[in-house]
Amino acid sequence: MATLSVPATVPCPSEDVERLHKAFEGWGTNEGLIISILAHRNASQRKLIREAYSSAYGEDLLKALAKELTSNFERAVHLFTLDPPERDAYLANEATKKFSSSNWVLIEIACTRSSDDLFLVRRNYHTLYKKSLEEDVAHHTSGDYRKLLVPLVSSYRYEGPEVNTTLAKAEAKILREKISDKAYADDDLIRIVATRSKAQLSATLNDYNNEYGNAITKDLKDDPKDDYLKLLGATIKCLTCPEKYFEKLLRLSINKMGTDEGALTRVITTRAEVDLQKIKEEYYRRNSVPLDRAIAKDTHGDYEKMLIELVGHE
Amino acid sequence: MATLSVPATVPCPSEDVERLHKAFEGWGTNEGLIISILAHRNASQRKLIREAYSSAYGEDLLKALAKELTSNFERAVHLFTLDPPERDAYLANEATKKFSSSNWVLIEIACTRSSDDLFLVRRNYHTLYKKSLEEDVAHHTSGDYRKLLVPLVSSYRYEGPEVNTTLAKAEAKILREKISDKAYADDDLIRIVATRSKAQLSATLNDYNNEYGNAITKDLKDDPKDDYLKLLGATIKCLTCPEKYFEKLLRLSINKMGTDEGALTRVITTRAEVDLQKIKEEYYRRNSVPLDRAIAKDTHGDYEKMLIELVGHE
Image (cartoon, rainbow over all chains, first blue to last red):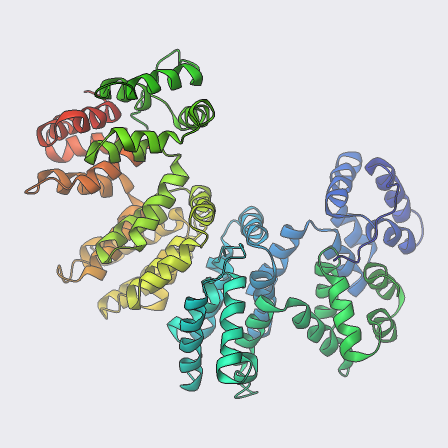
């Protein structure tokens, strides 16, 4: 369930484009006008706006926005305006240029998008960067990280509801053995996590929980300083309960000393059109504060306004 | 360049379907009629024929063919009639149920198809088998084989012509070091082979050849009894010179004691619409005998006729 709200009557793209252009003109930018348009159009509407802007003014709307806006507000508008698979390709490419912390972005894109959407990200990656996503991921990582990340970003999981309970039992046992041996980067463990359908993996993890008395994510908290282990835990959360994963990411990005705008902006802009409603509910359940109020407390100005428009008011 | 010949005026699908149905009727089957139709229609025409047959007679054409035909002839007609991505999904699924020799089929499909075609194979695999190709490949293999095969079948390589010569030089050096150390399943070696674009990989291998005085495929012939090493060599051939790979496969399937109909049928039916003309030329260059004559000498009856119609007469 999305939080994005689109007006009942949407102006035609050429009207939106004209108003956007006006918002850029003269002294000072009309940020409110920009937000009122772009934060309330869905992906296909934004695509048409970008095309219309480019043919009306001979400039990419994103470049025009970059000239007018700054800092976190600019990034939020930029990310949200991008078409979702192009946005994911962009975020993934940024991630392959940074060190390990950015591996979380890769995990998110690989594990919380649908199989077809992940494929579209890979196709957009070709167009934008003249390379494949997996070659950049493989090149930027090594060792256990590479072993886990490359199959995840290359996966095209089956998405049907079918579950093989015998297989679930057998693979729960394999996972248990490997985790008991602390063989967290074992071939079979990674094979199960990286290739099984989400329905099958959930059945396996339920079996694990029933049979061995502990959720696998608990058993993976063996060494809180081990970044690979944290990443493996995040992978499993992204695959089986994405809204909990995103809730925690928001919680950590808002509640810590100094807001982590990178994560905050990414979660809001990438989920507003997908499942931000569920994430909000999860956030309220866990924190007893509505997400919009938590964000408003931690951010300010146009950046705050943009995020709140995407999150929706309670 | 394909060898498939389609008549200048193609009958409409309903006409073809009626004639096929007639070929199945009464005592004995009119194999010649079946060949004259199915061996001379392209993929989209065959698709329309299958659809028209199903709506006219309430039965899948492939099932009707299976009732009428037998043995190698049946398999050749069956494979050729299938839509290419569905055929590849079918062949790959067969391969995941057998032991290591069938890994060659997986390599062929993963490395000689275009990136988009390989993706279509994966999508067809979901529909047909309610699983993903990579999960079956990962499940059916282990060790070095899995390490090589899973990223290959999951790849979505960039296909542009751009080449980074500095990178080619650096990666040729890596390949050389790993091969000198006999580390044939090294992470970086597999990363380079499994993720780089074919153009980039060719540049790297040219650099290897220039710098170290030997083609990499020569250097991989270290131990002719090592099946993994043979598979790695085949992978590189499929990626960089598929027609040479297929020529050799045909040569070995025809010339050995007892024809290898499995490989022969597979190569002819999967390449007739793609590059069989180039493979034929390579075959003649290497064997001084036209491919159609070699096939005619080694096969007989309707099976021979079907293959020859697909290969074309010199």
